[in-house]
Length: 183
Image (cartoon, rainbow, N blue to C red; front, side, top):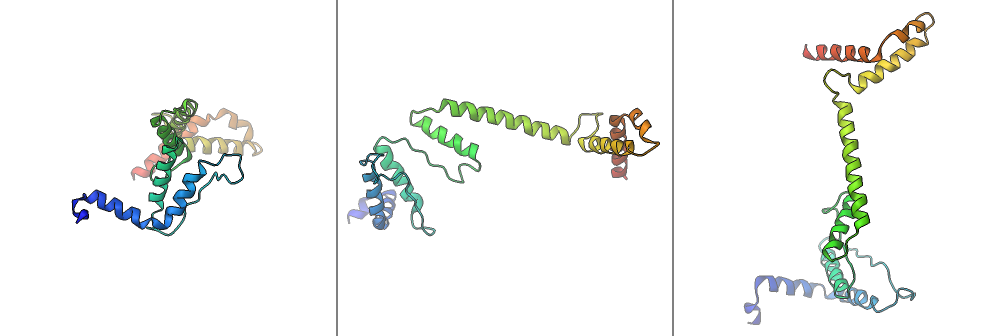
């Protein structure tokens, strides 16, 4: 009868907690670890949570985080849904620390510099693939230069390769390629 007065959310929470009875030892071990000084050999710096799908690992980690915050610890939780790279994971951690009143200004500065450099590199890579109007493509320039170096090694012809402009040669190759694509 008492269950009828509980909300659906409260019932779900109660059942989840009941299902984690087997994990009560892990929760108590985690909680007790805060009372052991870090210099003590019994202090644990790592709690490894593992098991098959659906047994409540994520829920247990959430409980660990709640226990740690209750004890005044700074916490952050990152998974592959929140971040797919190290810089993204660091940004999530930085954001979560800031929400707890602890900004990591130097990390924020380094992450911003990383984003700027990455943007510059991506822009440069795109520019190399898509040349400016009238300019030759990067691939054509590379082939033209390599071809002229090779021709420079041929006796009798090598003396004349210095008179050929690799940019004009590359532009000609681009025009030829465009003409062949149009057919």
